[in-house]
Image (cartoon, rainbow, N blue to C red; front, side, top):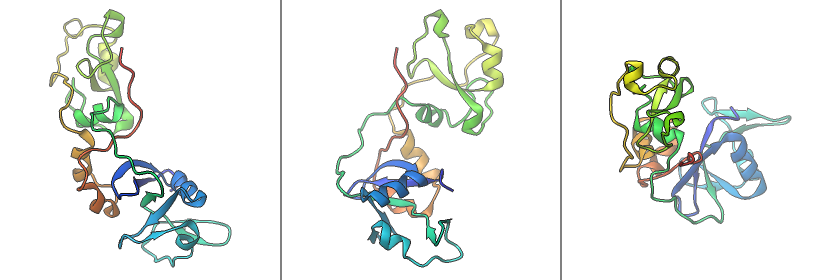
Length: 199
């Protein structure tokens, strides 16, 4: 439960990140953030931990009480907005390619995918949007450090830098929690994870 996801809003109620339940509780306890309920009421750690819990709620158990897991938290002082460029990250490469291996065309969970350089780095290939694709482990092994024609493989789709925000596409199709819905359809961009290094 502590590794589950919590939507983080800036103080203007605009999504800026996703964090873990563990980190969300730390921010609540430190007073950095407040929990947000379905009616958009905000709660500090003490008042949130005193809320009654129903049998349908996801909870964590402490030594002396059961606390409902917040699915949305609001940062108390942070008022910036996410950057409006498409961040070059694994998450966004997987989103661009729909978690589909660009060689065999099969869809996999993210944990079973790799990033592959179409032109291998050993052959001068760069780490850019136009040279990396989502790839399954089997195809990655088959291709190795060879060029496509050398491996007898081809791409399903030529890799390009997206002009849209991959997360915005994911957010409305693959909502993880219903509590996120009111906040995700008011924003066109949110980005997670660190950017990949460009060569």
